[in-house]
Image 1 (spheres, rainbow, N blue to C red):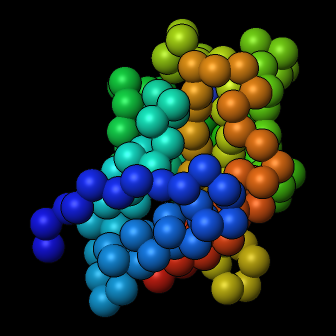
Image 2 (image 1 turned 180 degrees about the vertical axis):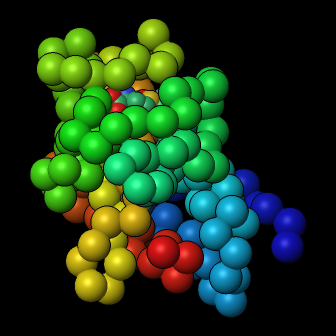
Length: 161
Ligand code: SME
């Protein structure tokens, strides 16, 4: 399947409907976790040109371990409850961070990052198997609408939970 350049609408409902359609192209019928998450990180990064890091951290014991991503090299392991990612896991709650330097315990990977959003990935039973992490160089780039939209589209990834 060759990738066709997508122009995403600005309006968030239409934006997330199209993002879901694009993700489904790579989740439907694919059961390999690396394949699905690699393409998902690329699809999401293409949709968010202002995001400088888009990727996944996956639960491994008491830690999150970096998975497929787009962006600069990042910390490999994050302990439960640490950083924005570990906090999303511990609190079982998406984190929308306007200014990363104001988040206690934020783990800096790319120094140019200013805002961040982390969305837990959940199995059907509600348990968390990883997180989607996105950074932006812009202050307060991610909004509540993004939180709602991303929480919806990541449900497509449950096929490789
Ligand atoms: N900022 C994250 C660490 C991962 S990087 O952003 C890719 C955190 O505080 O958990």
